[in-house]
Amino acid sequence: MSTDLDALYQEIILDHYKNPHHKGLRDPFESEVHHVNPTCGDEVTLRVHLADGPRGPVVQDVSYDSVGCSISQASASVLTDLVIGKPVDEAMTIHQTFLELMQGKGQVEPDEDVLEDGIAFAGVAKFPARVKCALLSWMAWKDATAQAQSDSATTGGDTA
Amino acid sequence: MEGLLPDLDVIRKDFPILERTLAGGVPLVYLDSANTSQKPQVVIDSMVDQLERHNANIARAMHQLGAESTEAYEGARDKVAAFVNASSRNEVVFTKNATEALNLLARTIELGPGDNVVITEMEHHSNIVSWQLACERAGAELRWFGLTDDGHLDLSNADQLVDEHTKVVAFTWVSNMLGTINPVADLAARAKAVGAYSVVDASQAAPQLPVDVQAVGCDFLVFTGHKVCGPTGIGVLWGREELLNELPPFHGGGEMIETVTMARSTYAKAPHRFEAGTPPIVEAIGLGCAVDYLGHIGLDAIHAHEQTITAYALDGLQSVPGVTVLGPLDAAQRGGAISFELAGVHPHDIAQVLDSRGIAVRAGHHCAKPAHARFGVQSSTRMSSYLYTTPAEIDALVEGLHQTRSYFKVA
Image 1 (cartoon, each protein chain N blue to C red):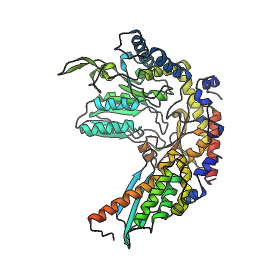
Image 2: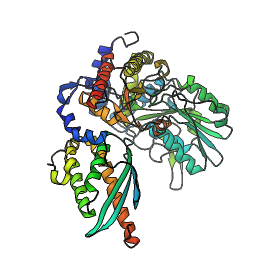
Image 3: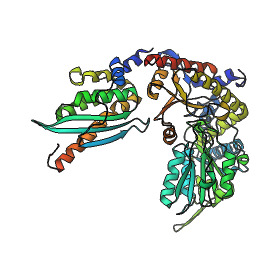
Image 4: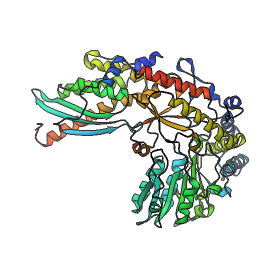
């Protein structure tokens, strides 16, 4: 079996695929989005629940329901591990770091301090057809978080 | 193996790409021909020759190159007319692809409130969305034949679906997902009985079955060039001549007119009526060469080859634990595209492991989401063979699927 294939399907990815973290849709939430990958049909429904923290809003919960390949499923699982409990600002920075890794065509050295299990996706960046799989839930989360924040801005910041 | 093309080794040598190796030095096993077919050297050469020696615009250049180019382009039309057994060369309209041909019909056939269009649940998105748009514009109703559990059209309510208000019955000849071969002549007759137009999507049929539009008795038939060993960028709309000349123009521009004044224009008759602007000349010539190539081998022989490979593949796939084949299990009732599921492994992941072994298949919904939804499947893996496919390549696929199961630890 080729080493490229093993680089793509790291054990960490297969573990998250078999046993996804934080899966299932939960209440409460401020926003829910549904994203699809039109080329392959992978789908994710994702909810974001924000709460007030000492230094701005915090990602209280991210819940999701999804169908798709091992890469997209594992990526959603890793996403929730990384952003739940973090201030939104910090979570957005993690998002940006993951995005840069995925768009780096395999040339970007992953930062384990920021991405933790997310570094396992470094090999995905070498497979252009699979980058969208890895980014599906991340883009959904960014979209949902932006919606939750804009809603909270219009309703006076009540995120309960 | 009985039924294979007798000169399979020779035929494979016609396709230079089949000699390629991929990353890691593995040979190519191309099982994605329903997506696009590979091209024989003769087609490639015909296009290069046109570009190297005869290139000029057609029908409007008063010089020798223009005459040669026009002759080659119109010669391609003759070849396509023969390929589908058209009664006149004027019935063959070159389009960009099958999708454009279907959209041409959906844009030009007049619909109104109270009319209905009947399609099927196994259509490619191009034969669904184009009619959805047409019905939305006109306030017409879209109806469809459902599917039986074994992947055939459910015709039990056909008399209710196709009624005196039906304007168009549009259906695929061979399903790109289920492989099912539909009773096209019966469906065309049903449309005719209520005075509706019949539209046949032959995109998957034209590569592997003899197409005889007069025997089918349909009004319109479309297919794309790149699935019949021709290039991309060229498709065909065949229509009965008197009907084509009744339809209003689709695109306005050069070549489709009779005369133009600032106030109004009159239009050329078919086929030029629907070929506005400089057409894909080189692509049409390549397509003409491709259908000649297929005709030389013989569509009956190609069909027999496809059925033999398909039967062998159905057996092989079902020998893999956890594989479920979608669509008919009898090779005689289907074409050479076989979609399947493998329990516990997503189609993307299957395709990725197969790709690492040089095996090219398609993974996803194959532009047939409703047909997948009908069977409760989000996406599938599809292998599709063609005249150059060997039993050894099917063996490689089956071995690759066993490997996939072990890689994802479902074995």
